Length: 304
Image 1 (cartoon, rainbow, N blue to C red):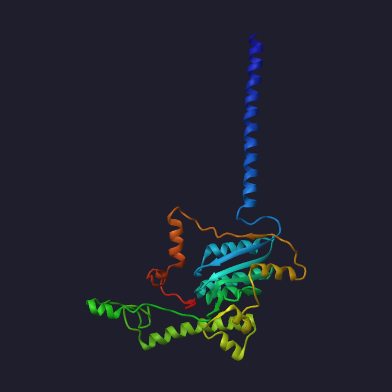
Image 2: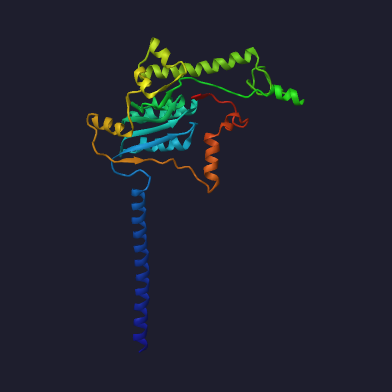
């Protein structure tokens, strides 16, 4: 009896151990399936062949999160093309340059189409120039080819309230321009040279990417904004339409696979609860950021 009891007890222990590990494996299998289905149906890019889509909205800064999304498109062989949706009044010249350069790297291996929405002006247009084909609505606001630097002048206010700012600096051009003192002729000339250099770069970009020259280039790069219809006449864009026209253009390309799904590549900002969206808004879209002493002066390509 003792032998039989020990035998059956050992069998029960083995069965319980076996059931435990079967349960663990089943749970892991279900979890893996859920993760797979979640990844497939989520906003993340799929593994099969597809057309990637990335949205650029708001003021453009040098944004590591946006660059990471674009880089994932560049490195994903399953992404056969990229559609960039742009809804931006512009941004810093360096930030827009970073987007442009990343799009040109992507375009070495796959078609890149820019679709302008309500506005894609100044720095937003710099980003669009990184595409192989630019599409806009008839009433999209674009153009505004130029560079601007602004700062407040509070010297009158300080004089009125009897406050002065004492500054010790290595040279008269150090930390020019400043809201706390009038800009000297030498300082203004130095700042103008800075603006002119960035503007020449922007203008040459339009000339090279859009094939404009002479009076046509002058008219397109004098700082004005244009509707999509006028931009088409001036050679700043390629066609009038929306995202469906981007798909039609891709399918018209020789050798491009038709009927590919379009997958959105999200910008994975860390939300951080209620403060996450607020922090993102303040860091990316706040006008106050332009005057922050912590951030320093920046060159902007913004539609005004």
